[in-house]
Length: 87
Image (cartoon, rainbow, N blue to C red):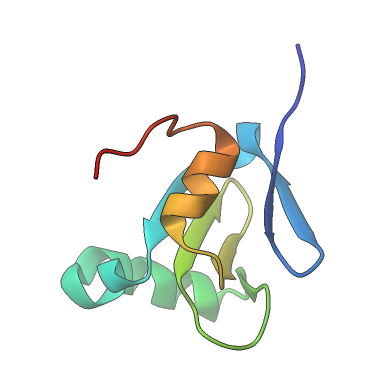
């Protein structure tokens, strides 16, 4: 069994087996539950911003929440969750 990693930007990588969800940052504005979850995680020091600049995706793992400048679609492709995009 091989372990795959997703590059989140900068020098940060996470194992695909640890990823619970990959969300677009727009979800924070749309969903109150997502906003409350992120506020709680940030209050506990569990949110890590991968790079400064535009925040495009939120990667939730078992132990941390990563804010990435890479789009959620690109991260999902890198993880192998998406093999083809209809356009």
